[in-house]
Length: 387
Image (tube, rainbow, N blue to C red; front, side, top):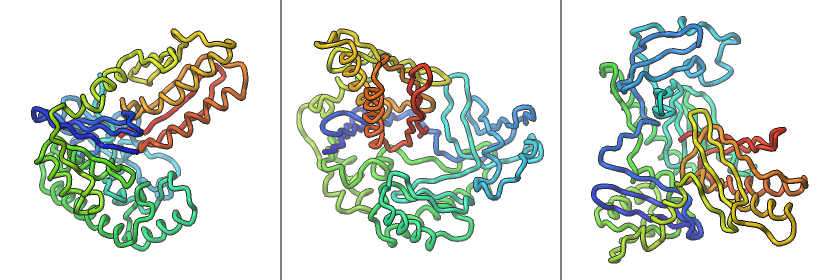
């Protein structure tokens, strides 16, 4: 059972998604927050670096954004030249360029940007100029994939590109059409603003927390939605009624005296899960160290000494870690390259079981997570898409 708990305190909105009463996702919107990823800017090229095949673009942030040549060439591989041209043939200093942020500024690095635009809707992702249709890999039935692709192909026009999101499974062509019309209106507004805007300026900002919840988080399997603020409750119901009236009825105003996050144990669990050292049920623990290049997760037996053999002790600890790590990736929104140093196992069957456990667990993640397998040193390589 999935539950969504929305707590409103002092102009801050917090949202927690529970699966089987276990915290798996968390998001918050503070009054001073400004989300960058997903937003579209009219920028100005500051300088071009031929040796890096990249350019720095001023989009109005403290640090200039980074634009690589692959993000300037056409998104469709069939339209790309066989040999990449020099970046100087595509961009010149002072040139205006419309770009979308794909990675927020982090540490000493500026934002990563692209000209391959994508605007997510309820059922679709709209990609102007992409020229192809794709279906989420998480939709497993071949017949449903073919139906959705055929529907999208009949709806898209010209060089439009569409991705059928996982939640589009079972949706009618009419529902997809309405979603596409909304997304076309958004893109038309982006082009209109960009035509008259001065560079640098933001011409489109991705949705705030409540619309994102309605679009991305609240699906048919979210059976309970509790909100402790009447205005926010009405706003969320209104957003859901536009596309999923049956889900709007699940939004309930909670007027209990005890804070929602305290009653559901979210505050305590959030604090525990965000520490560098996270304990496992048996007494083992994880150490999580994010760096600019990648995130390293180390698995340790800790206080757990087992009862039969060292191999069984190690195997049980690793199994618990394999179930817990995918949850922490979602909750902490860890992304990019992730390396897990499991405790060494002697039996190949144990390594296979650990990998199977993680493979099943990452299927619940809305962000694309790929398990690349074991290295020669026994490390597990993972990549998780930035969102």
